[in-house]
Amino acid sequence: MKDFKSKYGPWAVVAGASEGLGEAFARDIASRGINVYLIARREEKLKELTGIIQHDYKVQAQYRKVDLSDPGQIKDFFSQLDVDAGLVVYNAAYAPVGRFAELPAEDPEKIVDVNVRGPVLVAQLVSARMKKRGSGGIVLMSSLAGTQGSPKIATYAATKAFNTTFAEGLWKELKPMGIDVLASCAGAILTPGYKNTQHQKPAPGTLTPEQVAAKTLNALGKGPVTVPGTVNKLARWFMGRILPRRWAINLMHQQTKKL
Ligand SMILES: NC(=O)c1ccc[n+]([C@@H]2O[C@H](COP(=O)([O-])OP(=O)(O)OC[C@H]3O[C@@H](n4cnc5c(N)ncnc54)[C@H](OP(=O)(O)O)[C@@H]3O)[C@@H](O)[C@H]2O)c1
Image 1 (cartoon, helix red, strand yellow):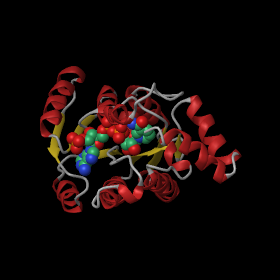
Image 2 (spheres, protein in one colour):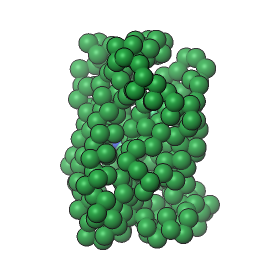
Image 3 (spheres, protein in one colour):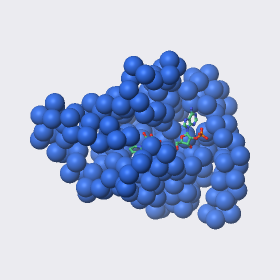
Image 4 (tube, helix red, strand yellow):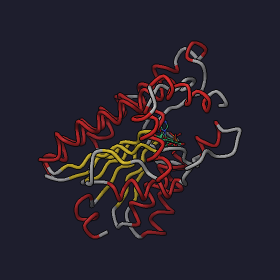
């Protein structure tokens, strides 16, 4: 804990922090003695969580309303950020479910904005700052959905594949500058977002947001990619390495067609 705080403190930014996994990241980071800056769109939720974190973990907490689909708002936030952020977690994602040709017209672009342009821009802005301070950590939330093509969430899944590959490249490149980069390829997590899309009992290997946050933060600095949970590790190996690609897509479709 002490090492984590000295390496990644004194402040962390959690992007997409108002509920679910983002909230769990904020709480876990605060429990390690690091101050947290929470960003998302719903101000009321951020305000409430900021108060809870200050009270429960005795660290400083701040929040700001930022729409991560808007690059202007991301640039404004980081250019005005007046705390020393040694850790940034990009948790936010947009993940509408539906056949690609039937999605609302604005959806595919918005998925790319929040899930690809957002993390690229955030990584660009924070890595420059972290390079100057000579240390830091960047966590990008990815997903097992990105291991193969995933019908009905095709764009979302592809953005998650992007995040994993992006983090792998940055991991190697930024390591000599003292910056740790990690993609966390999660399986199902019991977040409000997941519960909204499920009409069946949770998939095998489903974890709580608290479990995923803790396992992800514990893996930071130990490699480019982590897969929280044993069942999920096996699933990634089987779908990504063992099955022919076409079979993996078909198997994924068996699950996603129920969404
Ligand atoms: N849930 C799963 O089963 C699962 C599985 C694998 C991977 N993941 C990954 O884990 C991460 C979190 O999972 P989740 O989707 O279930 O969500 P979540 O943790 O329940 O919440 C998503 C957070 O992102 C914020 N957000 C969404 N769009 C935003 C925007 N345009 N600007 C700013 N903030 C935004 C939301 O806040 P506001 O609405 O207040 O803006 C919320 O705080 C995602 O990256 C997802 O891909 C999830």
